[in-house]
Length: 199
Image 1 (tube, rainbow, N blue to C red):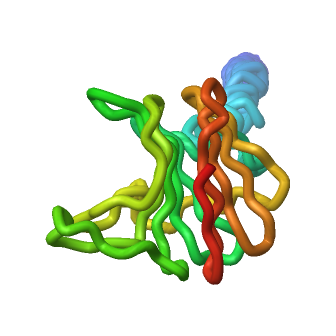
Image 2: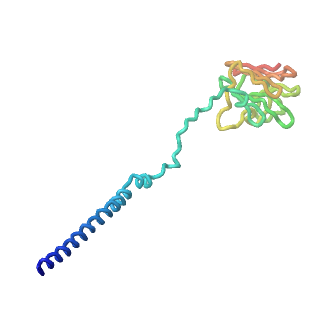
Image 3: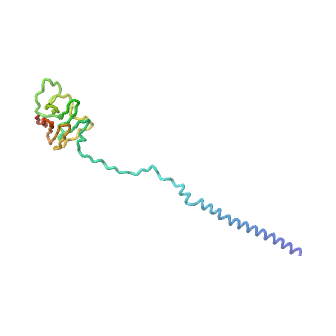
C-alpha cells in the first residue's frame, strides 16, 4: 500500500514537471512569433526606401537657345548718334556725322583727279570729301581718318542700291561709287576710285 502511494506521488511530480515543460514550450511558441515579427519588420523594404539617396536638386535640364537672326538695318550703322559704313568695293569709309556745330556726310579714300591743294592746307589733301548741313560741299583738308567709327572691326557695308537716310542726308552706293546728298539743299557729291564730282 505504501509502495502504490509513493508511485503515485512520483507520477504526480513527473506529470507536474511534464506539464511545466509543456507550458514553457507553449510560452516559447507564443513568444516566438513576436520575435519573428520583429525581425520581419526590421527587414521590410521601407528601410531600403528610407535609405535611398534624394534626387539631385542641382541637376539642370539642358535648354536649346536659337541664335539670333540679324538683318542689316540702320541700327547696325549707328555709333554715338552718327552713322558709319563701308562701300561695297571697300575703297571708301563714309559717315553721316553729328558734330557739336554741324552735321555732315562725307567719305574718305583714294580718288582721282583731285583739285589743286589750297595754300591754306598744310596737311592731307584730296583723300576726304563732304557735304554739310550748310552750303559747304567739296574736298577737305584733313589730319587723319574722319569717317570711320574706330571700332575693332570694319564698319558694315552699305549694300548697292540700299539708301541710308539719316540726320537730313541720304547716301547710296553702287558697285563702284558712293554719293551723299543734303536732303534740304540737294547739294552733294559722288566719288569713285577713278572719278568724283560735286553738285
